[in-house]
Length: 330
Image (cartoon, one colour):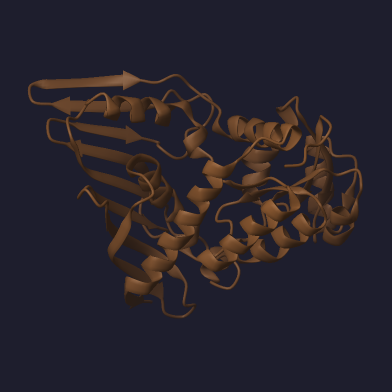
């Protein structure tokens, strides 16, 4: 895999809210990355982003990709635009950190990852939460028998309704809740249960006037019989967490997907006649993934494990669409 000379000069393709709140601050703070340019279809927004994060210039998308002094691209465009622009960035010789989901389907995901491999470039899906240290700690506790033999995993990520004009309600642009919120519990199930996860059943609630998935639930299972109950959506109260039910106990992890850097995550452990709360150290998951991406691009190290997770995640999304009962709602 090709390596770049540090620091990694990064161009930003799009001015999404997640870029403003989380990823660009992490890129600006990382000693191994330098924000070189911002590309935006809204010039005023592009100038605001560039000024806030120290990028020297604002360009159009094609101009940014053609720039020889840019080594990598961070791409926070709407979900259904990813496949097109990630491919263009890779063909322009840029490493790519792309917001999740990498694409809307398994075939497109496979094609992009194969293209990155053929070009000797890093393509990393910006699924951030596994880079928070709380998850490695929980996985070690499960391996050490904290709940006995794991029987059931539950993952949930739901948010309240968004304004009607929000692009997530347009399935041709934002892709809907399965792609936006559903990837969190799906990826968590893969992280904790392994890649051999089969979708048994699913329910998708579809907004009738737009065709967008607004919420859903997935039942999956490992070959050994561990079940996964995964809920997601944008018509609920805000919930984000994981639960691990075992033969001798239960663990509940709140703020599993979205802990801000100062937050010390809380894990509740319940066993017969025993209750305890464990506070984990604060961690910066966005800073961690940015450093991971920069290290891979600068040293030529592999991101194979994350690529395989992205492939399996995309296949599960395809499987959910295939088996789901669809319920139309106003």
